[in-house]
Image (cartoon, rainbow, N blue to C red):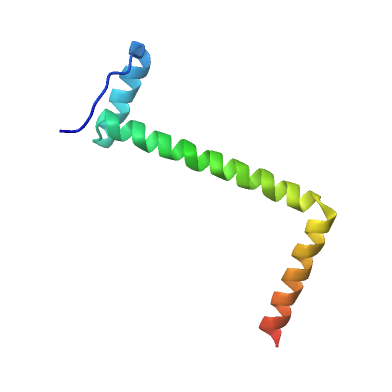
Length: 78
């Protein structure tokens, strides 16, 4: 038997959870897991975007990227 627990929420979030589950033919557990996974993906994308902006804005990193791109272009051309 799977382990379960009770989470106390107000009726509005419960109703939204149940409605979303019904529209997708998913259990509340599946909706919660799907939502948490999406939130984790979104956080990873936000971190990656912030890191990309930091690299783009750093002249040393930008020069390294440019050199790498030029090396790759030369390999493909040659």
